[in-house]
Amino acid sequence: MLKVSNLKVNYGAIKGLKGISFNIQKGEIVSLIGSNGAGKTTTLRALSGIVESEGQIEFKGKEISKVPSHLRVTLGIAQSPEGRGIFPQMSVQENLELGAYSRNDKEQIKKDYNRCLELFPRIKERLWQMAGTLSGGEQQMLSISRALMCKPELLLLDEPSLGLAPIIVSQIFEIVKQLNSEGMTILLVEQNAKQSLTISHRAYVLETGLITLEGRGKELLNNDEVRRSYLGI
Amino acid sequence: MEELLQHLINGLSLGSIYALIALGYTMVYGILQMINFAHSEVYMMGAFFAYYTAKYLNLSSSPGFGSLAIVLVVTMVLCSLLGLAIEKFAYRPLRKAPKLNVLITAIGVSLFLQYFAQLVFGADPKVFPTLIEEQTLFTIAGAPIKSFDVTILVVSLVSMGVLHFLVYHTKLGKAMRAVSHNASVASILGINVSRVIAYTFIIGSSLAGIGAILVGIKYQKIEPMMGTMIGLKAFVAAVLGGIGSIAGAVTGGLILGISEILVVVYGSSQYRDALAFLILIFILLVKPAGMFGKNRIEKV
Ligand SMILES: Nc1ncnc2c1ncn2[C@@H]1O[C@H](COP(=O)(O)OP(=O)(O)OP(=O)(O)O)[C@@H](O)[C@H]1O
Ligand SMILES: [Mg+2]
Figure (cartoon, rainbow over the protein chains, first blue to last red):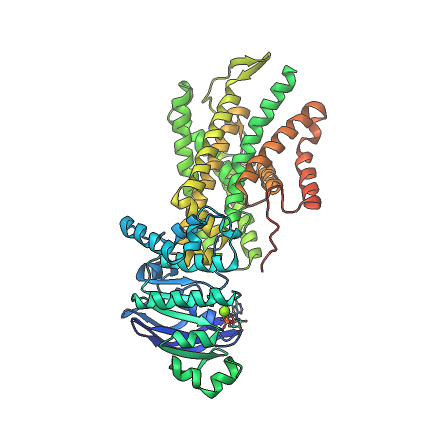
């Protein structure tokens, strides 16, 4: 579904990505793990088109690296960004509606909307609340639901577990698994290597802008280097 | 008593004109975090667009609501086109450039338009055609209520009402608020940020055009340098209310307009223009973010 070749991103003199290649097959959960500053967020930004990049990004057989970001959403790529990116001065409902901004299929939007509220009952109870007054976990759920409202084929999640209580983290990983079992392809960026590798089909390890390891989720869980660097074992 | 009432109405209509122009500064700031210094020249050009529209259609021979409506529509369209052109050719190429470059460009565009107007329209003041006849419509508590002031208040109120509806109850408005909060998040939700910016310029420029016509009606004199002082005052009004805030621009405009008239009446007209800057210095000292402003730390 997604094929990335030699992707590079420069922030002025700083090299965010030094040429990485990876792919994602339809129906997979793929994790991207790496320590702070490795370039995970940069990778997602490049895929969504909000930073300029060099190299090829092929999505559903089409080269999209020059497609502007708002049109990539229409093609089927949605993102729940780092820091959740919710709009604090808008109601929860308005935030969700913005997810469906570029869609016209009213009936299906309504269905997706109800589906989101079903997945995240806590969001449903808070539709009229200002999004800025939600707790961190609720904001994360809102951010994921809003991305789902874009009706993506490929969902990019940037550290959905960051700063959340263990029980909420487990809930979020459960929902990621559930979405995937319903056919959603997911690229998951995580610091929480253990849980993300457990639910992932495959994973890539990113270090200072380069991919250093790749393999099946379970394999990497048992890889000595991964255990030492990311699992603290 | 009736005198005070009359001054208040006078101040209110001056204030709503400041508010209309301040809205343009504040909305562009909200979206691009830049002060569009060319905005005051869009306003000035609006006055000339209105002048020539009325002249060529010979509308001053039939003043009234119909003529006013025609001039309003034509002027809004022309001001929008001018605003769009400025955004597209001067600001868009600098979208990723440092803020200072954009600021200097804005000042450049402003000067260009001032001298362009002097060249094309002449530097001498022109008498604005009569679109509304001057008359006393009714009296409240002995104070005569003039047709000019009523027109100004009604037109401003309707414009602000439409703006409020647009920003808070339409899809475009939601997109504008989203872009203003975080443009890159807006774009990963499928919002075409460039288009939203263009609409913001259309709206701001239209409001400047409306303001120009109202000034023409009330003061009946227009000239190529007319944008400078009113632009500065509207900018002060936007800062007073909290730049980026729509409610702030309206409140700031009204406060400035009313206090200016009161200074003229009970103080001296010499201090009229100084007042705005006194207020500006005062806000910058006491509440730099303005009345409705968020204390946002400037991200570089
Ligand atoms: N806007 C920017 N300007 C300059 N440098 C940047 C910018 N954004 C990211 N970088 C740099 O690029 C590198 C990769 O950053 P990135 O945000 O992709 O890391 P990350 O893997 O997501 O880290 P974290 O786990 O801390 O979120 C870092 O060295 C960072 O300092
Ligand atoms: Mg990151």
